Amino acid sequence: DAGITQSPRHKVTETGTPVTLRCHQTENHRYMYWYRQDPGHGLRLIHYSYGVKDTDKGEVSDGYSVSRSKTEDFLLTLESATSSQTSVYFCAISNTQGGGDVTEAFFGQGTRLTVV
Amino acid sequence: AQSVTQPDIHITVSEGASLELRCNYSYGATPYLFWYVQSPGQGLQLLLKYFSGDTLVQGIKGFEAEFKRSQSSFNLRKPSVHWSDAAEYFCVAAGNKLTFGGGTRVLVKP
Image 1 (spheres, rainbow over the protein chains, first blue to last red):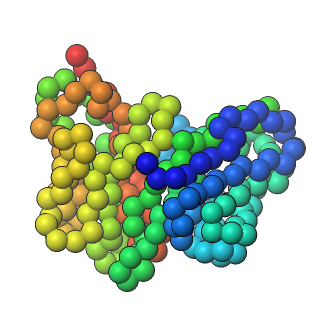
Image 2 (tube, helix red, strand yellow; image 1 turned 135 degrees about the vertical axis):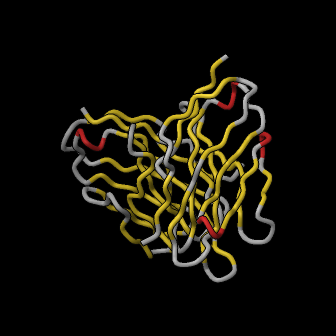
């Protein structure tokens, strides 16, 4: 299995508080992603990173920020958590090959976040 | 814009019967294509991948997928399903980033 770890695995937090989720990889992969998974919506991309300090928004980025200060860590921050951000969050990593397209992604085990 | 469509949200199949899950992609060129499986409460596991070459690719757990350029499709198949195949399946295309289909949930009847 690819070396990818998410922490925490479960968290309950109150509305309005900031929350940071961490994704750590030991594979030295270039790309890192944060997805959220909700019933009926599949996996939706929040933010992704294509290198240290290089990040871009996904389709559901409002209310989230990310940082990548080193290759192995990708942090997702909910600046002020809301109940609509209750979800399961997955981190993924991938590399590139050939013409620069990304290769298969490896996923973490997920973080279940509940905002009350 | 890159997109992946899985037309079937739910499929119910009897144990031992064959299974086919549909996937269509829209992309400027042929992307890399993948199928992932997610068992309840678990993360996502890679079943198989297509980069180029042979259009029929074999994966783990007895799954295979066929790439058809003319139809922009990458359908997943298994000749005989097992109860443990009950899960959600995602088709994914990769260009400069990953694009997921909406998923197909497979239920297996005894």
